[in-house]
Image (cartoon, rainbow, N blue to C red; front, side, top):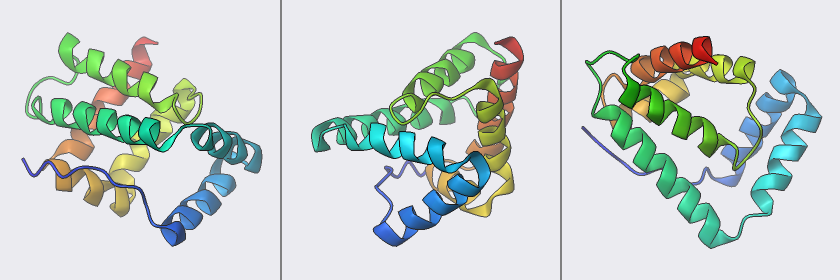
Length: 133
């Protein structure tokens, strides 16, 4: 496993992501997410990023196992709760993220830096999680 920690995107990358998100989910959604994120202190943001790293590292340990198993699904539930630091994700949004993680090369690359095969494994686990909501 590669296990490289997440870092904040630079301003140009963040602006690109915000534009794409506004196109996909609407300006109001992006504004609400930005406001929620901005309300966190730098220490809180660091803790949020550390939590994300912990979740992805824990999930990576299960690659090659059944993504429906309770331990994996508990981690996906933890990931779902973690997303609430930025916005309130619906099951449709969660499903969309799971698809995006295997369809968008930027996400595939991000997850591959953590562990080989994490993107498709996480995508499958998210689908199962959403089916059970």
